[in-house]
Image (tube, rainbow, N blue to C red; front, side, top):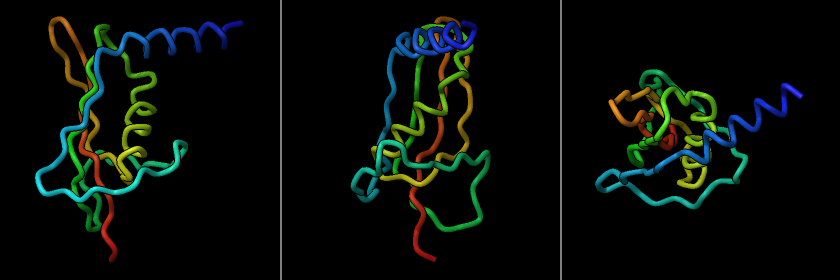
Length: 110
């Protein structure tokens, strides 16, 4: 039962998501989407390999402290853009809304 309650909380919280957007980087290439369950790397800082910035991800929520599920939302958006990683995913705290932001990237051939 506790597991069902936790899942219900996550789904309810995700339903409270006001918006998830990616602002494309100027001059970024367009790539076909990856599979819906693709693996995305999350880096707190720039990785030591060449990459192209595809855009800036921003998820804004009407509820506070929604860290549960944020990485999954970011992963889904990044997969849809054909990305390989999200760099610097961090929380943004505001008076009425909180959210998360990060940079969506695709690795270049080395």
